[in-house]
Length: 211
Image 1 (cartoon, rainbow, N blue to C red):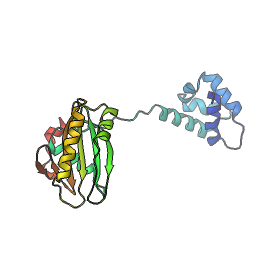
Image 2: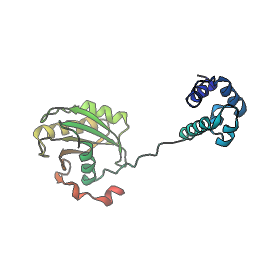
Image 3: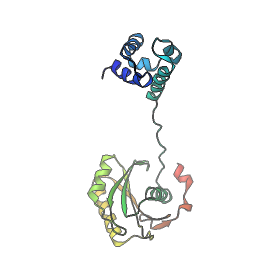
Image 4: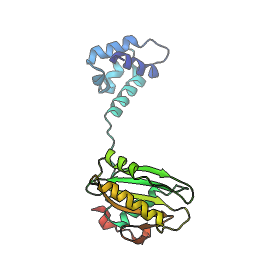
């Protein structure tokens, strides 16, 4: 759509039951471009014949919204078992069935993206190394954390978990990406396979996480 047509569409919401095509052309002619119209002062706009206060406010609000930039989210550093376990507990909190995430991390151990790579039943789940590799490459990961939940309430690693972790570790290593950890979550507790420790959330190391 051309600029005057976009402006015409916008004006129909503030000036119903009226042909706003001439008004749209007048605004574009006066200010030069749609971008300049959206930056125009409300008081000046409201004085233009046919505009009025409501249309002027709508134009101004749209201009303000156009300049909004989403604030970057603060990404925690997942360099410690405590920070990793807390992150994974929150990630898996609502999952009723076994679900595995591949968390892609940058070189500073901050998460780039968390992808679901497999879902299973209440007590079974298959992890495919190829999917983990694809996710890591897609997000340009330097490191990866695997995490999955045990709805049964026992965060201990099964033989299947150990074998799957080894397979994923080897697949990632073949393309120069490190598997940093595999976290198993059970309720509010988690198990770090890389550190071989259980980590309840109250042991969070806030100092390391904030670095």
